[in-house]
Amino acid sequence: MHTPENLYYHPQTSHDNSSCELQVHPIKSQHSIPDSQQPHSGHSARKRRRLRQFQWKCALSASIVILTAATGAMLYLLNTSTNPLQKISSPSYFSDLDSGQQELSSASGQRQGKKTGSASIQEGIVHITSFSDEWNLILVNPWNPVPDDYTVNLVPVQSGHFVDARCYPDLQRMLDDCSEAGLYPLICSSYRTQQTQQELFDERVDELTAQGYKLKNAYEIAATSVANPGTSEHQIGLAVDIVDKNHQLLDRTQETTLVQQWLMENCWKYGFILRYPDGTSDLTGIIYEPWHYRYVGKKAAKKIHKRGICLEEYLAELM
View 1 (spheres, one colour):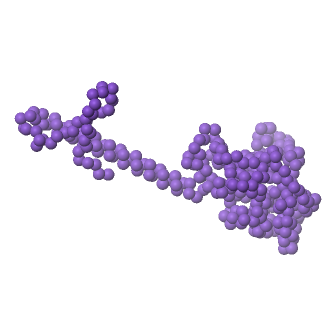
View 2 (cartoon, one colour):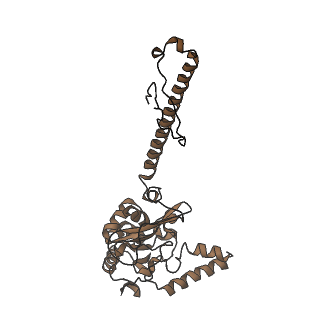
């Protein structure tokens, strides 16, 4: 940065003694003053040197500030350009995080309309805590319970299970095509009432306490595999647990079955996604479940499958 050789501050003409502004009077050239009137020329030279030093320090400080700000902005852009869940936790996205949560707008139930949502930050992980767009994109997870006014029109599907009537046609086609491929898909869980979800959760807690876990720890661990009542996708009728009829174990070995391999490869064509992929537990709140499929619609399912992301990451991008 170039700095002018001489910086002049005009003396204040007002006689108001209340002013606290620094008064720096211009230094005149020696050629304009007779030699007889310059008894302290050395002193004047020192003053000019100090003034130039002051100007240089100001210019240097300003340069450092500008460079630091530019570097910070560049690092911020690089850090948030690829991860949508980092974007929504940035200071530019949230203007106020006093409570750890910033409302973007309110959302409820099955209302259709513009995309709205909110998010919270817990232990360094950003969680979308509500989202509303189309009915098929309703978000239900540990941080976003089923709305109190949520209703669902149920229809029967395989083995006496029930699902939301709007996803039934695509689900039935998926099961039929899987069967036509010579496989044996079996629905082992679908829509659940609040009472059913509570019973399943309590059973899991009892199992853990019987194994020696303290009650508090048992609740925390149980919630990672059996959602707390009111926070399960099974309660909205858009989720189904499908296993191989010849291998009905709900554990990691399920991913090795021919049924799961077919479903993981083709479910997106019918509007379904593997809801809890491996390695996404911090975002979904649920352990890897290679049997839990969620209906999101063909458009969203295609994008989610192609990019290998989970529903939370997809919704973060929409926000």
